[in-house]
Image (cartoon, rainbow, N blue to C red; front, side, top):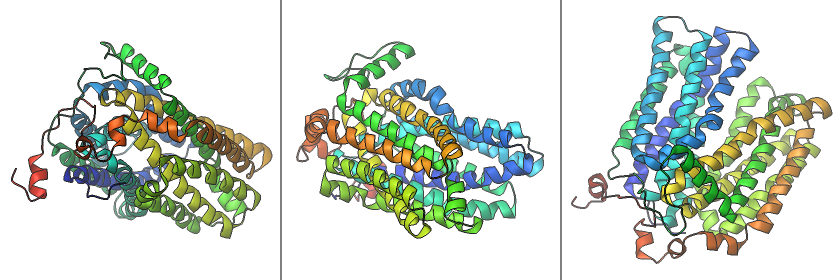
Amino acid sequence: MSQTKLPPAYWRLWTAAAVSNLGDGMFIIALPLLAVRVTSDPVSIGLITVLFSIPWLLFSLPVGVVIDRADRRRVLVAADICRAALVGALAVVLAVGEVQIWMLWAVAFGLGVGEVFFDNGSQAILPVIVPDAQLERANGFFFATEVATNTFIGMPLGGVLFGLAVWVPFGVDAASFVLAAALAATLRGSFRPSPASTTSAPVAATTIVADMRSGVRWLLDNQVLRSLIIVATLINLAFAATQATFVLFAKDRLGISDRAFGPLLALVGFGALLAGLTGGRIIGALGQRQALVIAAIIPALTSALIGLFARVWLVIPLIAVQAFTTTVGSIVAVTLRQQIVPGQLFGRVNSIYRWISTGAMPLGALFGAVLASTYGLRAPYFAASGLLALAAVVVVTRLTSGAMASAVPATMNDPDDPDVSAGDDDTPINLSRDPLDALLDGEQP
């Protein structure tokens, strides 16, 4: 993996994501604190989480078509502006009036829709501004930044600001979206995919339904992506099953107090943060296939050990290791999608991928809750270990080095190709030299 510096355009996109995630962290901690002030009804409060996550199931597929038809930069800007308006309106209502629970439902749903647009758009735009040899490093920094700004900075800061005035964390979150939109708008060039087909992609369709079908067909025809989606779905089922009752497991089995629960989550986040910072180098040293194998096997072992030996001194490092290896695997999976899928199909294929894998999470949570209620709080960890073992089998048997190498376009496999080092591939996107990048590089624009 090349260690040449990432382009300035990437750092502007990275900064936009960092600012946005900082605001998200404040929002995540402030919203439930606000909800319990508005109502004590568990169903009403639970609907906030449901409405925030359900847009992935409802809109992921058509949003993928929009991503493949629109300028991805404009999608990012529009998504952040709309999210700023929603959270800003909530801040205003809190400052001057009384909030009703339906308002929190509406804000949660709107932010969920915005997240579908932004996440799909940012993953689609990254391969255009970052050379292929730097994708793993670039994705790793994104993962690390999300964890650091969201968990370690945003959430504690949101709690402090909420204590000062209820509306403040929401106002700051709205401002973070505006700043993120402004940073994304500084990217220069056209990020709209060409409708022209490539040798590996079907001719672009003319209707949304036909476009979605072409994305499904392309995904099903690619053996590596089919295997990756099975692995991701099994992993999400497993972790959702354990996370559903983790707070009860931590208190009843590990003896974690309310005061210590936050630091425990921070330790888990530290594992993901470390993986984001070092994952690119690790994958470069091991290779994508070997990194995937290790990332699949270790969580299966750690889940079984957590179920067998519920001791806080052992569980904490096991969970941190689990978070580390899972994040490394996620970096490989995202990078492979960016390398394999043609640019004019990426929005659709990525949306289908995430629709299936993310849609498994509520099922896994329900499965884990039923297991814990019927067989005890350790049971979800044994079930998760079995699901993760199945994922490891798929990785070992289906994601072979030959299959992965043949799935990636030949130009991307050649680090000495001058087009690759310039960030070009068969993605038909017109990206002109950004004058701001030239100035930051010390060149004449």
